Image (cartoon, rainbow over all chains, first blue to last red; front, side):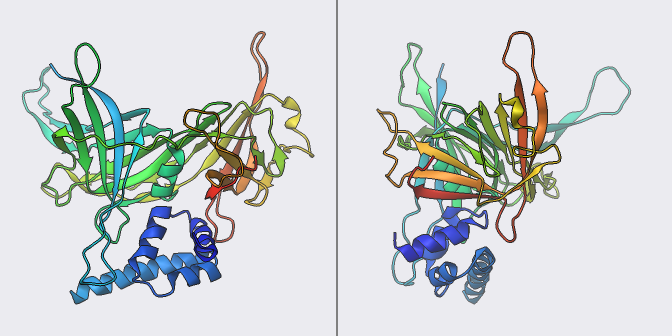
Length: 64
Length: 322
């Protein structure tokens, strides 16, 4: 695991959410720069990324 | 007559949609864990008559709300999958799609007959109940899945006969090292446990249904309980009667990974994990003694958010520094 990803993972875990959700978000590739944003941000930023992930998903589902 | 023993729980991830729409979706990740115990109480509520007769003459089903409970020593794997806030089981974009409890068939003389059975749920709400880490013993984790019907008419739990048993993880058990709480070491601690005190919204059957369709997490209020034998902890340099503040920076529960067919994985190997908590640390029992037994005390750390950070935070795949 890269240091950047490790750092992002640590930031995400501070939200109390699961690592499985973090991996899902990272693997999806549907949120731009998710790793970078998490690595740079704090726990609040991590939660924003989760919200963005769901909003992006909903928008994609609506388009389909 | 077939008899069965517990085998494992398999948690399946959701199918990952590909980044390239022309690529096939990646196979869902499956994680199977050994279980110490598991159960599926049906939680049946009956309707009964109000006739005043000694015996009921009218009975029926009002609701059936099964849940899956499980106790495992694969603590880290489950914490990674479920997190501390709980979550929903379902389809993408949720991370987890299915819980499946496997029971292995036993012949009358022992051993497996090979015709095994599985119970699965594909929708529900999972949450943690308790992490127990008694001194010198492998830690265990209790958790629950409140199963839901997808539409009110589909049963929330299904059974598969002649199921194929998964291969559970054999290398995921841990013991707790000496806890450090609110900047204090507790080498005398005899037992530690974290109650997650997860409460849920009311689970009711759907309209015109006996199966539940909705439930959510209402609150998660983790507390860490430490039982010890040092009665001199009650002092200003220890834990004052009016409590002591604990932070993520000064509260650490280091979990040391056990080695299959051995004692421990090397401390410098990044396979251990730790928990930090933040909150208020206070006495629950100042002193207690009976007969010739050693006197004991009990302290509780009631955890709460520290800024935007969750009350309890896990760090996985790290070296052991207990």
